[in-house]
Image 1 (cartoon, chains in turn yellow, brown, orange, green):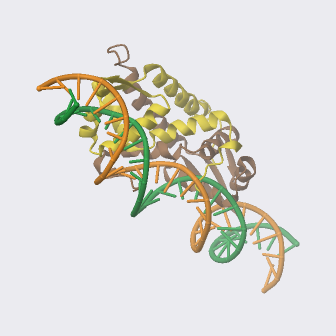
Image 2 (tube, helix red, strand yellow):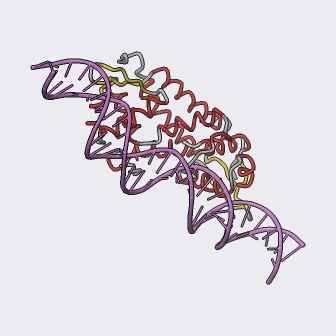
Image 3 (tube, protein in one colour):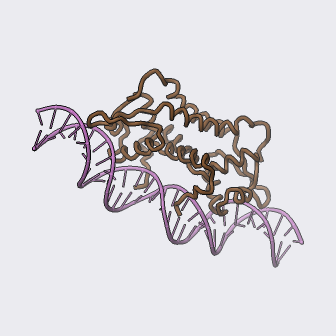
Length: 112
Length: 112
DNA sequence: AATATTAATCGTAATATTGCAATATAAAGA
DNA sequence: TCTTTATATTGCAATATTACGATTAATATT
């Protein structure tokens, strides 16, 4: 039905999935990588860099802001975007914890 | 249009986004976490554990197999699933690299 | 061979996502 | 105030995703 049954999963599972989903688009990865490179930029720079229409970029930025991984500050007519360092660290830790759960027990048991 | 313009992004960007997208559903997170816990199990176990219909679980398993993060071995009428340790490590490194790109330069510059 | 078990596939419905043109909004400058 | 600049929102079309019932395929078991 195209509708995720999020009520049958834990909050942590939904949370991690939700963030992974936001990272699950190359335009949003590209935006983050560009922000890493230049530290800060305005929306128009991203439209030029990425090669998608302004409304499309605006939508992707909205998604990234929704999970808090970036922040936008209004500066006159433009908006200055940057990565939110604390949230970035949080999300990094989230993934690290998820991956380490398995990595730490590798070799202890074999596969099928 | 619902169609990602993957041709305008780099292979790395598409690759990371593609994997993140697969992790972007709580059912698939739940499947991976269960596999971490029990090491190996058959498909029916996952259907019972997760609480989604068998075809739905089968579809999620297909996605996970598509990116190689799990593997399934036919054992009689059932299929034994487990995490692919090497691929897991690869993907872990992929995310780690992505996140460290920013973390390593935190404090060097300020935000907006 | 007939039946049971398990998983994959097919078909379908409902919802979500992606992308853009057109428009709206909001602030700066002339 | 009028225009310009920059971004957000709206509305829409196309495609993708999620979920499941029904069916199929393949192997065990009797």
